[in-house]
Figure (cartoon, rainbow, N blue to C red):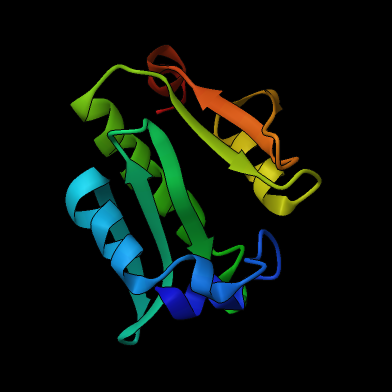
Length: 133
């Protein structure tokens, strides 16, 4: 998953050491849940949702596998699982003007402003999920 995270061209990390493996394991095993997509035994995409903080923590696809429906399916699995656990609104942030920002708009997310770091803040309500399922 870390390899995929470092291959992306948008929403890149300024320092790869900011997200160590132990943080990824913590989010998957204690704070929420994660999913991966494999092609020929290689991880080409993943998503992680944080149930405790009610936020999407990660959704990334290897650029070589972009535009093949992998992100959409990872998103569907993640959001379906989330709203099967709770009806609480979920949020996420992504860089403005990116394909990711357009993707979230198409998936039923509502932009509600910006975070202090400049990322666009999105939210999805339980009712939005029901409409877009």
